[in-house]
Amino acid sequence: MEGCPIAANPSKNIHSGHRSRMRAKFLKFGFEYFEPHEIMELLTYYSIPRRDTNALGHKIINHFGSISAVFDAPFHEVEKVAGKSTATLFKIIKDLRRIELIDRDNNSDTRDFRTRISEMLESRFDGLTVEHMYAILLDNASNIVSCEKISEGMSDFTRLEIRKLYDLTLKYNVVNVILAHNHPMGSPKFSQTDINSTKNAQSMLLNMGVRVVDHFIYARGANYSMRELGILEAPEVW
Image (cartoon, rainbow, N blue to C red; front, side, top):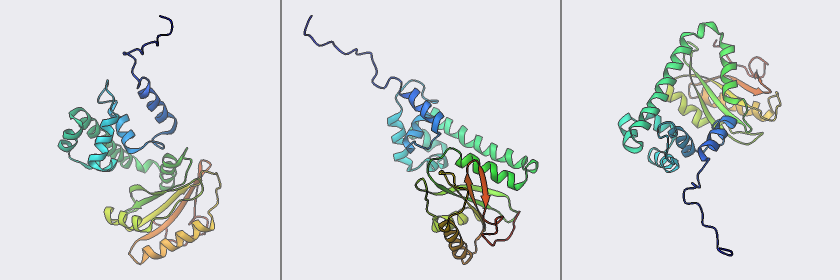
């Protein structure tokens, strides 16, 4: 009838296409622009095929506090919060990561240390639009124990978190650290701030029994070493 409003289609879901948009966002940017609960939401698409999982993503993060805490939690705790299918999915992801690290270590003799560092930096920094800083933690035999993000900032700056860096060395029981950060704007040169903050961290951490043995920049698809350029005096540990 003329003048009567057209009734909305009750079968039309206001969230229609949301999963496709989330997947497209991930494929374009990775997890760079995802909030923690959105990461959980995306993962649960593969354990809960036909249901809005945004609320579940919030629930998981609110309960455990962080993504790392989710994957560190016992299976039964995750199951209580998120259900058996999701807990199983998270266990698969965690165990697959462990198998990957073992496999990389078993095949590490096919790549020299510098190549392994280059591949690690590319996987962490390629495509990022803001600066991130990572700590590569080495054991006494110069094996890579872990690579951990310690800060992120703006397009041309990130902070060197010395206390967080020291806490990581305690967590992994290591004394040798390589720092690395990216220059999204493309400059391959270490700034004076980069140099000063690295030397300051090196001095402070040495008093705590930790050695900063290098600092890398990743820019324009390549990486550069302070030690190799003669900017940083440090022992060669590999």
